Length: 497
Image (tube, rainbow, N blue to C red; front, side, top):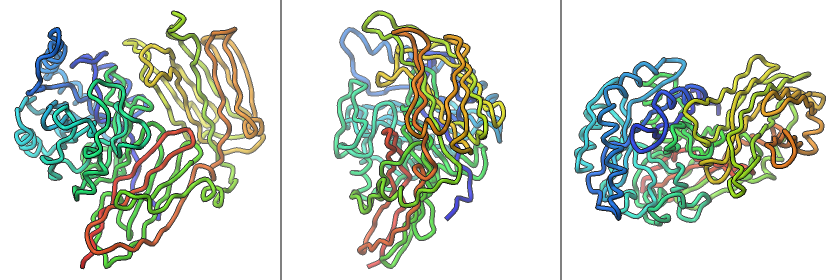
């Protein structure tokens, strides 16, 4: 089982100052282009059934809606100019609020469309269909009537996928990791989770996006979307989402190939009762577990012993370099720290680099740049700080995928926030992570994480599953040892009586 398409990463739900967030749209586009394959800016458009709030707080939302309406012509122009097939894809979009019907992001494939503010989900759906778009419900698990999903009005026709993870938390289930606590709309309601909707027979795939309000698409840890597509174009990415060849990711760019009887994730399969499920995982850190979920229950759980059984040493490994920490707000010492450094690689070569860029601290002018200059040099310009750090983590990081051996040497040439040259070998990182400091306490520091062999990050499995007559759903859920997760869209199986 090998993928016959490429895996592209993006964020199709994020905000900035054209709404009630921070930052310019130009900045959002710059950031998206720097580390994503595709994105959609989804400005806040309307909230037709908003109630009055204490102290007139609703004016905050109303002012945001007006900003988007006034800027809509410029939004369309900037979105159109950002799109560059084969290099970077941008979609036009907006977010529609509704207490009763739940919030939805509308993603459009064209260069222009009117911005509408309908009072019903039916009118929004008619608009979306007329423009060949997608209508994606998100932060599902809030209570219905409080901007949580309303499964009673869900229709697959223009909602082939739902957003199960964002900076709000995890909507797959009400007992899983990443609970809701960032916002004022409460905790997770069981009947509104993705699992509850699948159990009642609804069909959809899984996506994740950040819902970041600081103008930072693709913010690490806040949600990311993977799409298996033929090419990097609007039409191909849209087709991949419609076909539900999607992976919902918390942050790390975990690749999953999932098939049932040879049909890829998102498919509907007809069967006489026994099916074969195949899954391949290529993770960015050590795999902790891979669950094969069948009808809401874990049918098969593969853990570290299963990964270890296939472990091999073919000279491929991954190393995570994390930097930040430093002064914290409780001591009134928090600050923005600029970083500039190169990582040279001797007796080895860089095959890929995966940025893990947090959204905080907010800064309109600063930009991150993570660039593989050549197979032996990574060049980074970045910044860290605790102001507005998501879930209290101020750090940035990059994961290097390399080919080499125990004698591979990493040379860190640090120029900011302090001058330093430090070297560490793959042999040393096989035994222990290695910390470095840019000055005396409480100055910023960095960490070479322990080296991770390819055999610890890859797993493939085949399982025969007997299913009773009726309709069923199957999907894999991946968890790394560092807590980052991924979900592939379900395959739906129809078994005849």
